[in-house]
Image (cartoon, helix red, strand yellow):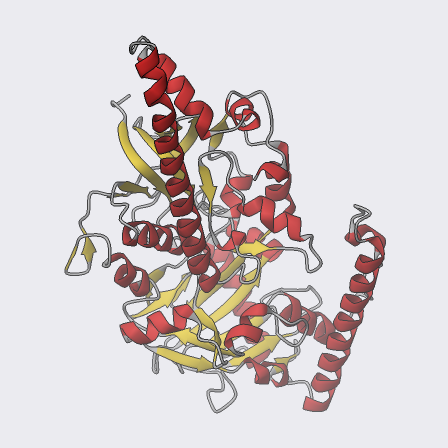
Length: 502
């Protein structure tokens, strides 16, 4: 192994959370840091790719939460950067629902089915909330004592259930993003990509030239495999045999990665931390892009989104044309989630293209042209992501968020999954990184203050003993001031930290 490089802080992951945490640290005068990114680019789950002559977003594609009294910080960044966006109106999608014979369901039937689904979901939420009130403090699992809602059965019911729950429509539950920032959503439609915002943010603290980051504090293709923690710091081991050491680590790996075996911890994470990590669900969200020689789908007002009703829930259900974003691009996007995403990721693109074309021919007839190209992202099988975003139970214990976010010794955790109000969103990741950066700065200040107190205590002691204390003894006394007994026992592998200490 290479000889260790020592830093004040190591940030693992150059997604939006890792970069916003780094920005806060450098703004507070902490320049001695390094960012280790596993892939060959920054951005994490914000990722563009050239397809069909335009730049498409494989991951995050919208700025959600615009138009309210409070300004979404990511929307502010987009405006400052001149990022090109287009307003998206999902509300008309329910009136563009096709059956398998290519007929659009009557608007009255669609509206009735939609209202029934929303009422059912709201009823279930109220029931769970009531049960939660009854069992609060008892330690019971709410999900085990509530009855599941009546299941949707017909193709249109299944399709509406899919768009309601898998797309987190604001009508079902009060989502903080829409309550705080507004209910509008804007599609990123810029050749520079959504990731341009991250590059602009990185310019504030990393050396860049002509849009490229040339700063040695950003190290790409560094796959972290192990974190070894002691009382005095953290040692980080990467797959290529490098070793980095720091006083603190900010870990911005996704919840899917934390649930995988990519990164090991020595000593192992305490049980309360692992239980919190395992409780969180991971959503897989796959946007499949199809390029055609010409348009054969409706492109008038209120036709951007359309829905396919099938007997199998989520089977190529939610479609969007890209004409509003990129006129003349002749691109369709279909979004799959969870089980369907994992199934499609495991098969060939040719098989996926065949299935998608079958669905399109159901809706628009047998004479439509074949797609000339297809792009299938694979977020679930990407070992650096293992999914698209976190998904907490609707009725969840606040302690769950506290434990997922809480540091373990000198390892601080960040990412959209640590944001109680905005988990699952880009602005959630951005704000989480800022929060973590601020918390770490506060911790460093406390440690420095403690060190000064330790030195002040040692000065009269050294004078009395004629400076007979060895350096090792001095360090030992100093370290006793840095962490209490339970923390020392955890770092020696003898104790899992209880929640109260954190």
